[in-house]
Amino acid sequence: MMNATEKLHITSSDYNYDYEDLFSPCDKEPAKNVGASYLPVLYSLVFVFGLPGNVFVLWTLLKYARQKNMTDIYLFNLALCDLLLVITLPFWAYFAASEWIWGDACCKIINVCYILGYSGGVMFIILISIDRYLAIVHAVSPVRARTVRCGIISSGVMWCVAMFTSLPTMIYNKIDNIDGRIVCHTSFPSETLLRWKFLRIFRANVLGFFIPFAIMVFCYTRIIQTLLKNKSFKKHRAIKVIFTVVIVFFVFWTPHNIVMFLESLRELHILTGCEFSTRLFIAQQITESITFVHCCLNPIIYAFLGEKFRLHLRRVFHTCLPSCIMCELWDRLHFAPRDFTTLHRSQSSGSRDSSTFMSSSIQLF
Image (cartoon, rainbow, N blue to C red):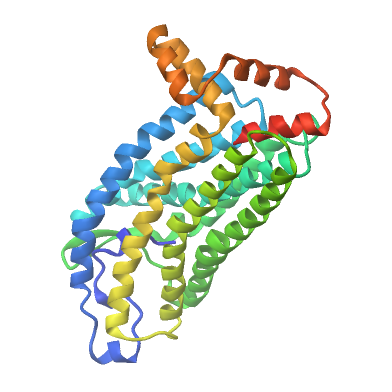
């Protein structure tokens, strides 16, 4: 998917026109001005807040969790995807405000990192949802199926899929001088343009939103039904986290996917009109930048709200901070020594009944 910043300085001649546009080309200069003033600020804010959060998650998982289970592997890869996306934002911020100055090779590399982070992040959110579904609904223990090996294999498959989706960018992304400005954009051959349009529509709308959202709704609905039948005192907190996960995903991703669906209809000449095209272009820039905020929220939703990761976080603070400060942090974060002991015992135990495993599985949240 060519992101909105790639289009900022492309002239109207680079767009597909409806019949009205053939006689009166759309002036997208106001839309470009909106992007040039708005996008650099938001991209910079997401970079400032998203970079340390995801780096901290990666460092904590590498140092203390060491990917001993499938959940940690998925959290690690999600943070890595978000980090890939975040590190591209300074380039897009400068490009939105000025022009592309980093050459053709960097144009391809930055776009590939963007697509890997963007697509991969959604894929690992799906895997985390499925992992929680298996752990709670079907009480599948790590020893039986949710093994490190399965986590590594499934993660590798997802990275291959994300890499495959970035192939068009590797091949067709390039820099051009348009109206005296250097732009980094995707330029498909005219003879295969319609085919690439359909592939882009399918990837953006179906693979990028509808399938992930359907899987999340199914998995978390079944998880809630299972938790409501369980007598664990932690189930209410787990249900709150589930609603947070689904609502945040829906709020931050739905607007952009609606706009992309409308853009697909425009490209297929089903929706026409110069004013509509200009407003849709502005909406693309705004809604796509909103999805980037998800990179800042993922570490909080999937890592810091999870009890197991918080116990890893406790070890980080125990190593880095004086004991007097630690006592106050434990109270604020609701840590208790027995939580760590319980988790250690549950991880070292090779067999358990379903109710005990259920209580341990809720610690995923």
